[in-house]
Amino acid sequence: MPKIAFLGAGSTVFARNVLGDCMSGKVLEESEIALYDIDAERLRESGRILAAINKGKGGHSKISGFAGIENLENALRGASFVVNAVQVGGFDPCTITDFEIPKKYGLRQTIGDTLGIGGIMRALRTIPVMEVFARAMEKVCPDAWLLNYTNPMSILSGFMQRYTGIKTVGLCHSVQVCSEHLLESLDMKDKIEGRRELIAGINHMAWLLDIRDKDNNDLYPEIRRRAKAKNAAGKHWDMVRYDYIDRLGYYCTESSEHNAEYNPFYIKGKYPELIDRFNIPLDEYPRRCIEQIEGWKLEYESLANQDTLEHKRSNEYASHIMEAIVTGSPYKIGGNVLNTGSLIENLSSDSCVEVPCLVDGSGVSPCRAGKLPVQLAAMNMTNINVHLITIEAAVTKKREHIYHAAMLDPHTAAELSPDHIRAMVDELIEAHGNWLPEYT
Image (cartoon, rainbow, N blue to C red; front, side):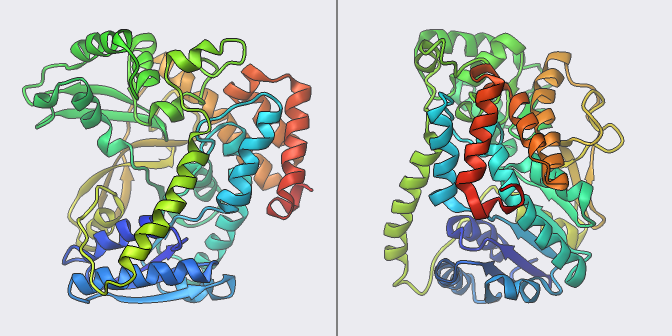
């Protein structure tokens, strides 16, 4: 049976979903599971919850915990699959810093984990840790597949794919629910069963390029009509992406609060009315973090006294990927992979793209998606520019590339002058201190 190492196992809710899924099927139920985290208390909590789920599933899995960097190689040794879910620097202090310092300069964010100044800083904190993971994997489990769930997805996965020898695929939660949620929200539920779709682009900005019902009828004309009417009728939770449909012609995979900050269009100090018009929740990620921290305390108190827990399999890709590789039975995912061989013809070859992938006994095989409509490729490239320059900053350790990445970020450049961008970056680096020692 395979060994599964989970890095960042203190992310208990996520570890519960992924590893609970693994325990829920016959193929992986007898796996050896190694939990790793630098926070021993969070690791203990996760171990307790997962042990209870394992017992509820028959107790087939063998679970062990490894705390601290000195135990990283032991956690990884002999692993067939490594799941990465670390958050370097955590909510407090690093996410707070990523939001509060830009606010001083008039730069507001919603999520700040994928692009923008928040995404850049998060990437620079995380890439050195990912490189440590990669070197340890190259030593003790060189043939393992790394399933990366940590954001910023495109930057981190792109770094691993270009600068390490580790087989890496980046996984998100949004591709598999994109079209279903769209059809549900537009009162087109009758079109969900048997639908066919094509999604390609980059993480958090992949495009629903084609969607057809079970009889091969193109659903986009009706989607465009209903989306425009719904945005005109009043506020709702997905107004930015519906505006994408109206102005760009296509829907995109990740949420409106995310996409509000991936471009220069919606969060603009000169046009504050846009925030209200498009129902954009500023400071959304810090708010979620606080709610999740408090919610988990209550949930853990209710679970801690139970030695057996039930688990319903989630829609996360990870367990299905592992099963497909172990059994050889094919499975389709939307995966983040290097754009080798022009999987998307009009995006750069060194970018990390999100495309359909076939998974089987040979691993993860990405599928060619062809050309994107020119306006969609252009939107993606504004984000890819930031991805590539941030990776360059991490590899070369040159502070000027951090300035370049921030200057070319669409939202940051739309709000701040070059001098203010440079000052903000300097202040962020200083505030992060030991989290960014290479640049201080």
